[in-house]
Amino acid sequence: MSKNALSIVIVSIVLVLIFIFTFDAKSKAGDSSSTQSVQNVEVKNGVQYITINAKGGYSPRVSSAKAGIPTKIIIKTKDTYDCSALLVVRSAKFQKILPQSGETEIDLGTPKAGEPVQGVCGMGMYSFVVEFS
Image (cartoon, rainbow, N blue to C red; front, side, top):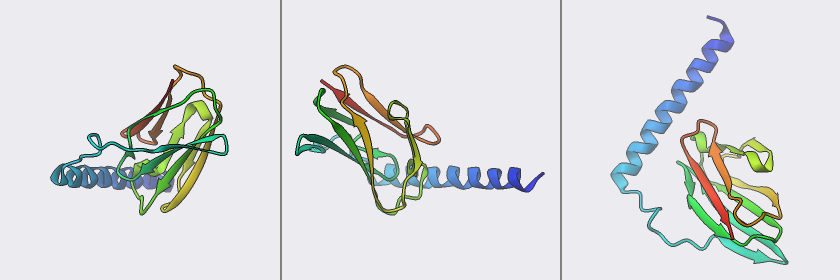
């Protein structure tokens, strides 16, 4: 087996183990993120900002925002070492490994009503959606 293939296998195993431990910790703690009311959308100087946290998935998983105004997503990471650190937002032509801790801005332009924007982790396990009306 070549060194590159071995490296890919090792990285894959590590990511699976991280997922298993993250999922197990969430199930023991009781994941209440879907029941919390989150105010993660605000407009400043005519630009709409949607804040999404990335660690063990994305929170909130569903956001509602206004269509027809310039919009940016702010992805916040803090000690993020799981697959949610590799984010893909196809409609914004965005694919990037996020910093372990920090903020990343994604410009969505001016979204149209009824055209949701979806983000997904590099392994396809975690996702979020922003709905525009």
